[in-house]
Image (tube, rainbow, N blue to C red; front, side):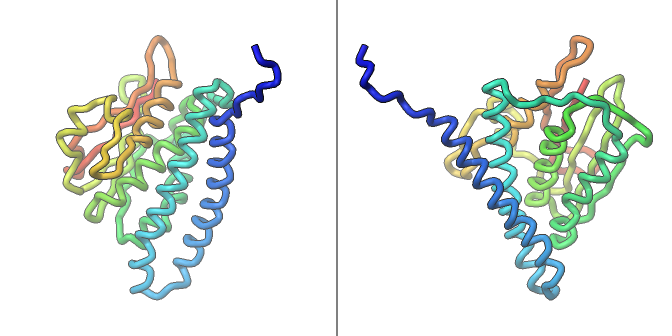
Length: 228
């Protein structure tokens, strides 16, 4: 073996570092847009809201990519801790309030009061926030976030009153998390990330999961996260 040959660079580590830097820069832009929207006139706010959606979508994707890299390399600090559902939902609503307000979207919240559950707060917060952000793009004007204890499982639903998921996505199941749709530009990253996060949560022989369906309380698409 030629000892003089240079070692191959660790491309994955380099990309992870680059993603981290981009995430930080995009995060600054998200904060700037959220602050600036409050200073714009009514007409300008409606025009700027889609820009905030796009920037938040990119930021979500970068965070998801970094988390997937860390989980895949087994050095993500998975933090399974008891969390107040009341506090969790309150923070999720606050994080998404600016985009919802300036997009003219009403958010209905329905959660079991006084409920506590064990999960990784940062990961689950990322999953639900991404689902809400994604739903703002497809709903007509209403979203619904529900968090319930159903037969010993924590069930979180993000629903909208849009046209629902295409039949091809519903039939693809987990495969959609690995596929790439070149026509729409969808990589399925968000669903893959959400499914990976759900499966990290295990209890009493059960494993968390992500499910998609149409209908629900608002008649559109319904993103469902189940945690044991």
